[in-house]
Length: 148
Image 1 (cartoon, rainbow, N blue to C red):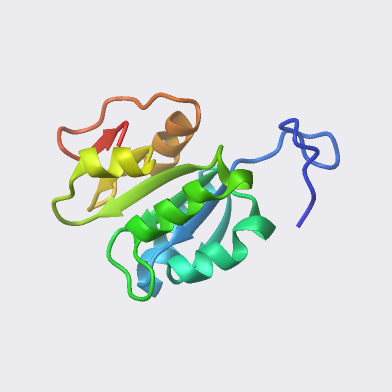
Image 2 (cartoon, rainbow, N blue to C red):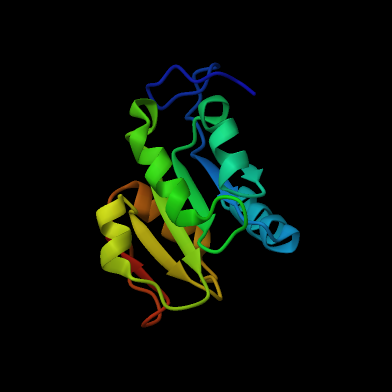
């Protein structure tokens, strides 16, 4: 892992690829999402659940955490709460993935930046890049919600 200078450039002076931590208890989901995001220009790290994600948060230093909502041991809601408690993670975007209904207002109150509904959008890398830049392009209705 190459250290970043913190100015958006990698250790060799080239632009640093955005880092995403993919958190999901389903191996196949992690694999597919990780491959999609790598192909879309992200450096990808993964964790099986919220506890594993918290354990590697400082080392990985992600720009965005893309987490499933329903997981054993530590779900996405608890992960979001714990990330927001950490000073070093104040700028980390948290994006929740879910297959079912979710109280987006509550997620916003907890510090979640966006909710993406499964099945995940085809243009997931572009969506995450837009979220990282504070905006998100329109997608099919109901597929995701930004600001939660």
